[in-house]
Picture 1 (cartoon, rainbow, N blue to C red):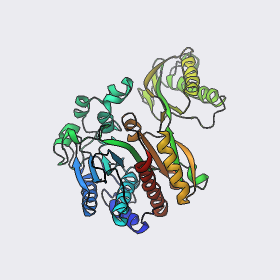
Picture 2: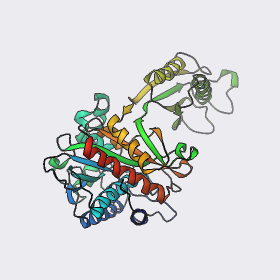
Picture 3: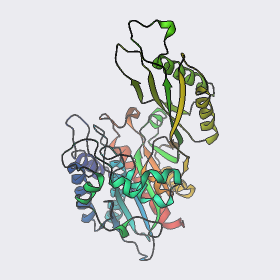
Length: 426
């Protein structure tokens, strides 16, 4: 059992947290921004220091590889992204990069023998904060392997034309222009692929409170939850707020409020505490304080492992569309959906064994959030490791994970990779 260095991991956390430092605890580090390029340069510097070979692909993904004893063996890869949301934290994404770096640094430092090449990578534009959508580049990278309903949303030509959401230092008009001017665009032949890569690992903060609530350091992730996202649209008619009687109104906002409360009541009756559902977007028209709203739309994001449970919620949503609400009509629109992504069971077992042998407290856990590895898994067998997140907070400046827990996560990652080196056949 090999152990990673707390001192080295702590230094990486401190260093990478400077790139995009927002001045009040967190970072803003958009993909391919000057701040992200500083993080990339630091990654390359540290990986070159241990003798790793550096490659870029045509999507600006960076790969740092330590050769193995078998020159014909496929790579075992590990990594994540270095970009952040606006005013995000110091751990989301970058912890997976630092953990992969730490695994390779430990291999080099302790001269650990391995047959397969070991690769740490940085994936471009996971967050999609400046150039949406999220997981853009992994969606392009794995496009030929994704289900058609997902693949259609990540076509190369469409993604290259995506405009920047805001002006930011060093930003370009489109993602394609940013890619061309990044200095990190390499050859398409360097992309990770099933022909060159045996398996993939991604360490990540949990981004939720479950591990902390259960006093566990490490989560052994078994899947990414299936989900669907719908919009519910309510249509009434506008009138003057001061002169139109209450009993004659068709108030779309009141209708939406009634339907949302009904939805919560009916979904809660399913008795599924592990089911999560969220309304995070609301649009009100005309959104004027003297006008009764004539159109209101809200989103519904629903996540669970079991497609039968998701269907039960979908049935409730469809029932809502058959009724009148405060005199208003309701229509529904499917925005997207995805099936549960199950991680490779052998890789999950290696993570479990490594966690148990290391002696860190751990438990099985699902991922409710999306990650690049869920797309990579369609192309290359993959799995994930979660590290406890303080108060479950993420995508915000208070986001925090203890250096000791981060180091233990890297130790689990390293030993799981070594188990794959010995036993995994794909």
